[in-house]
Length: 239
Image (cartoon, rainbow, N blue to C red; front, side):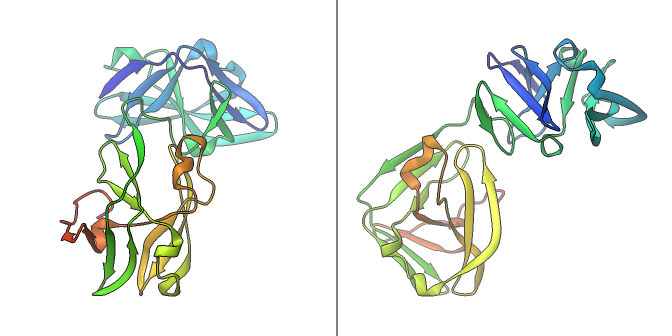
């Protein structure tokens, strides 16, 4: 369990009101992939926390006191936890809010989505002249010599291709939508019968504008040739 301070001002809203507002938030890695915010209790609206009497045990954090979050006429049931006697002393005197139970989150004056942005995750998007060809069950579904390659910490390179280089006749729109704090909201396609093998960010967040409207494919689930060489399928959480 890693804990560190962040210099960002962090706010969260419920029912149109600020519930917590701090410049002394903690970043706590409860899972390996991204951190969560813990707010000092003095920077939380005290009237917003209503203890339920229930507790939740964590092997690393100890017994958490469960709170319902109240803001005006809106209640988010069991949406906050505090650990007054945690063996992890840094989080004593702090409270964490369930991300998706709140209405909105802000780092400084910019709204953030899904989870806090990890200070150790970097996204680089580079124009390239690599020859990228995508096959699904032996059928070429994309062939491009002008990809944008997205390098994101902890993940394999992703090849984003112009739609004019993709067999759009083999793509069937899916109902799936995912959200990323670094790139935005993605729409998906079933590709040659393979469900949700391709995606695109129609309107990515500002720092990822270079991939707007381009199509990427799950390298983990199909065959990718780069400059004529078949790439080994990576083993990731998306495999």
